[in-house]
Length: 105
Image: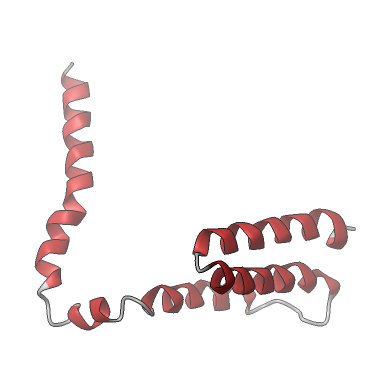
């Protein structure tokens, strides 16, 4: 019973901690500009992993087809549907299909 109680207390504390830390940050002069640009921040944050993942992609080889087409599908679906999840799912599905059928040896 003690182990369950301790586990529950730690779980609750870890879930409450971000909210406790976020409250003072909202009034911070450093964080305020980031919060005011919240409409552009998700795209900026996603650009970093995109560049990291595609930086070594050889564009002259056929194996570059799957990521390039999947990226095009994702970039096309997100604005068209005005929703990120359909774009992400569509791009992922396109990549999986292309890697398993077209690009695979």
